[in-house]
Length: 355
Image (tube, rainbow, N blue to C red):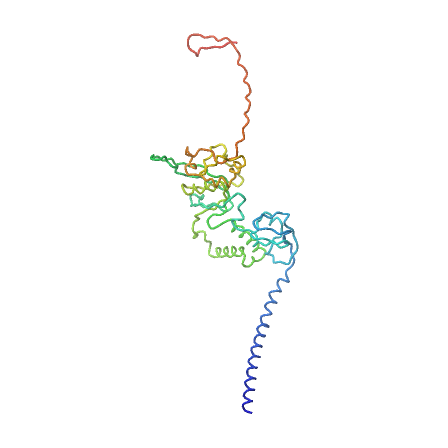
């Protein structure tokens, strides 16, 4: 009997251990369940508000039009979605957006890429206090780019031929130093959200808001910040090579201009520089027209001699077939009145004419 009692005691002990483990697991699940309930309560208590939704699937990289959007009422946080269709039209999705879904800020292209128009490229150039208008340039401004260049001299000749001229007109500034158009938009969003409440946790607006608060608390960082060393400009693709070559071989200066001043230099009245890659001689009219596209002009390139206006670079760039300009008919000049010429003496100055 003592042996049977020992076996029974061991079995009871094992059963007790199993029951203890089971009770501990049930207790953990019971303790964690209120957290899930608490997280679900705020979403259920949000009031409905008007937000922008899609009427069809939107592919990434294609600008959004007003026909792609509609509005509806959803229970979302104030920092989520867009209240007006005008806030979304023209924006570009960074990823595919399903039909009928709410348009979120995280689904749209942000930063510098959102400010580049079709046919433009974002190009960074070096700047300093002198080249950057004493660092008074801000993202969103319009500038003219002037070039100071030491023109290449002839082989064996020891002569200097420096030049300074306007290189490109009215380029948009996408970024200057550490600031860009994306940070400005996020800062404006942070200010509006701070006025209405708190920025969405983890959003770029919250990061900008916290950065601004830290700067204000420390008395500002402008005095201790490193001076800007680069500017990002929106450049037509056919002019990007000219800008990069001038930055590499010379010195660039930015001239700040009024946004309402739309005057541009007329390059058509000057001889165009020759490209690095010449055109084939067997091009038909369609190929010649394609050669005039900005992308093909950028691919053809430009040399330093052509950029400097040397004589060997003064030939036509790839352009479409020239259209004959009609000759303006000249108005016949009225015949001069005939008269009798009287010559007195031998000097021509004494000639008189009488009818």
